[in-house]
Length: 398
Image (cartoon, rainbow, N blue to C red; front, side, top):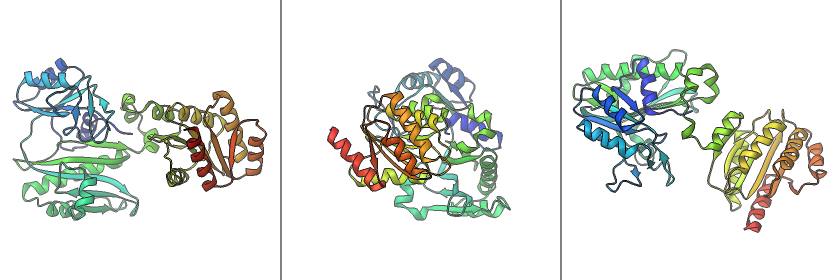
């Protein structure tokens, strides 16, 4: 689950992470009132959407081509910037051409920036440890740095048994070229950030840029925080921070029905149990000449009701021209899945081709249920067969 920058900074502040003062505003007048509470005379007005690259983004209605982050030097300019952002659609590299509607802005105090750095924390699957990444290339997308200058990304893995120590932070600080007061400020910052990461069950925390001020302080100029969805049951207060308007309606619907769903831009809807199997299914669809419209994992404990909801979400996407169901029966037996498919097909009056591949526990019974349903379900013997048949069905319909 992602949250807005202003929410991330408020959370991190509670853990002693250095952030600038700021105020969220839903109207231009509120932005001015927020700015009045700051020392000034420099203010930064930031669009609040769940996407990076806001500063380099553009508003379709703005003839001056200004981005979603603007540095201004008066209260009048604060109001003008907020007016230009709130209620408008901001297009960035991460949003695509559809962009995202800006419903609020964050008015922040100005900052004397001497250097811009990058700092991120995530769980590294290779080491099974929280890993701290740092780079002198602050302000740039870390993916771009990794692709063009991998040597500029520094990594330190923290042993969960011993936790973070001074040698971790000093190693990073010296590698980043920090000195004197900056080292102590950086060490405090990273230690506080690591504590927040663990206690809040974060998946990713990204500070980009992390700035060194003229006074030698280390401050988070931006903050991106993403939480582990599987741990949100422990943090009802964090779950309340979810902004439903930032989510694809289909993805929001899936969350409410305990389904793992990600909308994509293809034409074949996928319903699979197991993330690995789902990825393989999407790959083989591409291999045979089409593209997936979604990632949808119904989970190992899928039942008829969940299968019906999955079909409903898939078919709500107008781009879906066919559906591929790829199920390996384990805890969720094939006959139970088959009954769910039949029930969903009848209740939703499916109008697109449906290809089903079943394997695993009670597979013969599952196939029998599908064959005797009287529905136009295309059976597949294996994954390659299923992919070929669903792609052929799409091309035939085209």
